[in-house]
Image (cartoon, rainbow, N blue to C red; front, side, top):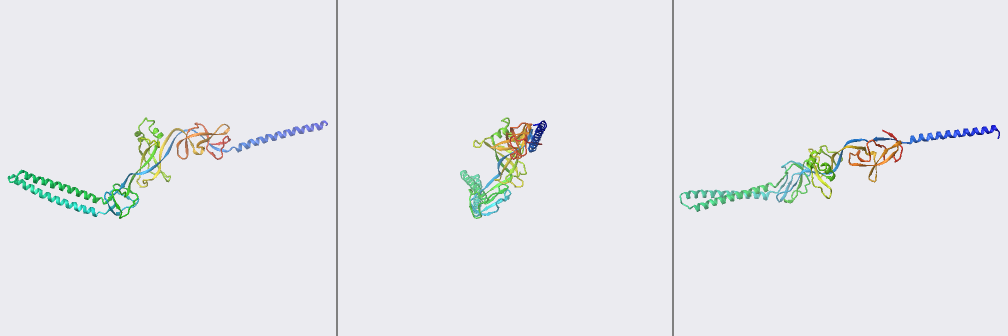
Length: 377
């Protein structure tokens, strides 16, 4: 090979090597640019401490302030049913009437007995007065006079007995009109006119629902927290509690606030909880005995970390978040949360520190452990 050919061959090798190197650098740059373009842009949040005010939902059942069983006080046949199921009645209103024929006859008989007893008293009184005159004139003995006085006293006793029987007969007659002892709402009426009833018969239940009582349970841990580990009494804890709300079975929140008025000081060993009650006003009659719902108790968390629920995902009943690390690489981290939440946020009790950055977008969908992201705040 002559010198010219050798130089031309060497030049072509140099040029080819340069071209290959140039293409390699360009491919590497394109790959790096593509990798940068492939990193998804996702929203992140820098966590910090704050005060959170959440509500704890506790199942509750409602009863009228005073649910009264309506029972007749005499035996007889129902002659009239004057109310319907669910009707609102006022105190003293007649609800049922019972056949009064026999009881009216008893009243008439008692009145007649009173009249006879009164006549006997009048006769005995006249006799005693006359004997007193005769005694003063020494016409009769003192023992004869005393006998007439004793007769007068016996007649008066019989009169009192007859009058008491009359009062009782009239009272029994009044029981034929079964009236409402309180204002409220009529419950179910299982009997019709013509039914034989007695004092053991439950005619209906009258619910005095001007105020409603919500019964619910508080666990042992909550009781300890309320009493500040025993540093204050249960009564002091109740007095310091804020008003509570009532979530109805429809999911709506009742428009009137309630107040917790009592908490049992005894914990049921079977359930580990104590019964409590809250009273809610019911001016519109919206609430009824037997309603169910949830008591919403405010719970204040001071200096705590609050994060959106959509920033978490769950694996085997454990909560996790994705924490953004160096080079925008995300890593999965387990957290624990408080039992209370408002349906949108969680209170983190462990697993995160102020200043940690977590992913709040695409969690459980696109984000994976070890993925590089393009953080968006």
